View 1 (cartoon, one colour):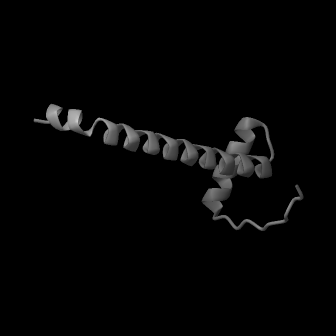
View 2: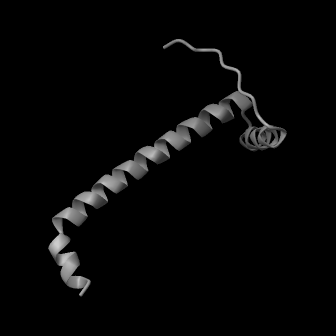
Length: 70
């Protein structure tokens, strides 16, 4: 898969945070940015799976949950 060039415009504060993250992990700011993007994507995927599982459980046990709530 090829790479695409991109310009990322950050506030001074965001640039400082990014630099701190990169320095703490001993990586480049580019790598820190890529890791942050992937971490958020993974977290959202996990949240979606948990929400889907919870919805299935609530539907499956709706009558039990209703009785417990009384």
